[in-house]
Image 1 (cartoon, rainbow, N blue to C red):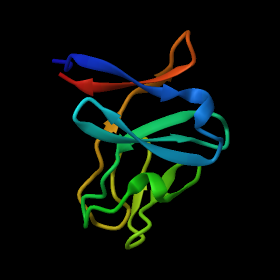
Image 2: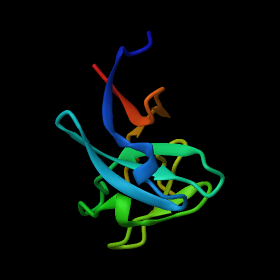
Image 3: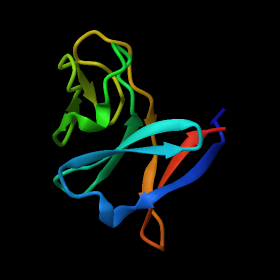
Image 4: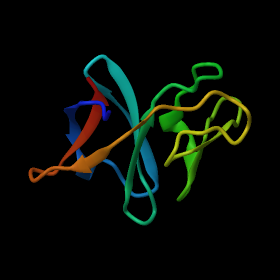
Amino acid sequence: MTAHLVEFRVGPAADLPVGEGRAYAAGATMVAVFRLRDGSLRAVSAVCPHAGGPIADGIADSAVVICPMHQHVFDLATGCSKTGQPPLAVYPVRVDDEGELVVGLPD
């Protein structure tokens, strides 16, 4: 069974530069959205499961993000840790017709 998603408009896509991440509130959940160098978007939990580090402040490339606190590495597509930590939640993200970032969270 596929979980039903609730979509949240979290901010203007134009405010997210290529190669950077930002933390956004999606309802009561904080998400980190990254615009990768190829222009694609990824959204994951904004909080590192290891020690609560700010994932949006981490260094991201085309496949992974590195937590800025203790350098734990997470796959942006799956959320899986490459360094033995619990995974990050991964969320669908898109840009709507009005240029807003839209993140889907499980209902």
